[in-house]
Image (cartoon, rainbow, N blue to C red):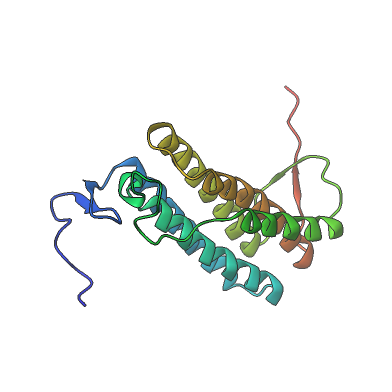
Length: 190
């Protein structure tokens, strides 16, 4: 199989199910940003961090491929009029969302109480995690916008929302593990 097909040379691409849309379509922006997020999570996972977080991030990366598959599918071609699934697309479940919540709760037990907003930084690994968090927020915004025009599975929106929270808590936990200072944002008085 060749990696290049030349079918997108005119600025369009095919969704799962065959529908062709412009490469700038909000659906493409949504799953493209999820793909970008997945790449940043790979970067975080490649850092010198606890093996538990590497395993969690690998699980999340698999979930993000599922999210990408859902977003890359034309919803009109995914199900029949009877409601039966036409295409075999994996789903994001409430268990996947609970997984993130449980992981956050475990990390929160070890973290000091947060009293201020925190500026990203303090260590390269922590900064990579914050970049992933902001890309996740962008993916969530784009998917929310897509949902206004074409319905998106509500678990996808919930998962992206929870994942950005998870990445924030992970950045704090990595700061603690790496003995990096958390820089509090304290507004300057004018």
